[in-house]
Length: 287
Image (cartoon, rainbow, N blue to C red):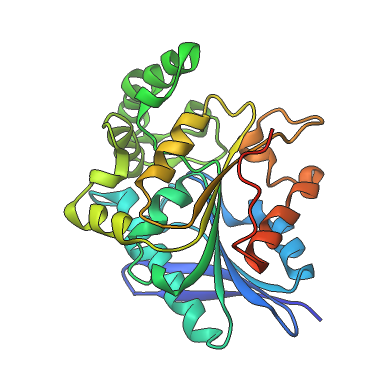
């Protein structure tokens, strides 16, 4: 019988509530890292799918990302800490709890940007990144470039000044983002290489990363993660084994950046488990 439980991990000053989806006779353990403004409940369906495929699953929320009145304000370099603190703690916990199992990583959007920053990233056997992009706005084209420039330079700063946080309606999400996180997100988007050049440590961890990784761009995801931005992130990874896959969800996909994780598009999820079971078998760019 499958077992699901919530566990508190991390330090006193930066606690995390993670969710464990456990199965009997597992083939491995998959950590799912969310997109900005997305809570772990969003990945419940794919977690259950991965359970059926024989994997334990671990989901989590970034510390303090969603603005709650009882949380302490987040300080500088908020986005980097999602990787150096939160994700690293989850990887360390997963490795200690499931010592005999291989650990895999499924990252959504910013999940792929923070992945190399985790000190224990070498404990991960393979990574599958969906819509993970180098966030610098120069990688966008045409009307989409105009839209993201307006968002980063005008809309985001103005709404943060007005509200003291970033309201969900301003970025198309459901949850309020803490001020420091929203402003850090905007700052990185105005650089040429995003989080890669955050520090010498960031550069070093990106360059030294040696985890087989598949980068998935999604057809029609022109506003949030165009192909050029996905490939730019891939080029920053030092992994000797890395592949790009351009996927058409088809059907009734409206926002492919998020639709990939919706149950109505679960026919695509088998790509994740196929890669984890044999990271050397990748088809490369799909039509």
